[in-house]
Image: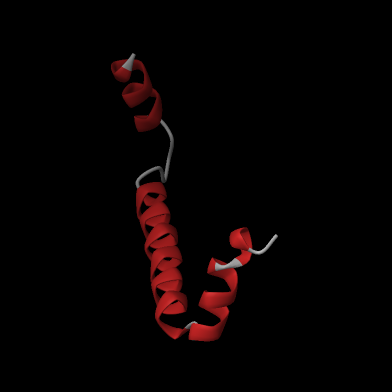
Length: 55
């Protein structure tokens, strides 16, 4: 199965850019998430963390 996919992907022109694009997208997403976690206000974090307990 892997040989079939590999041979098919080799025939596509410009296919080598797709792994790079996906790496950039995932890296930027996690960097933005990392930035948001460290810049979020403590009051907001406490409010959101107590939501399941407030019935």
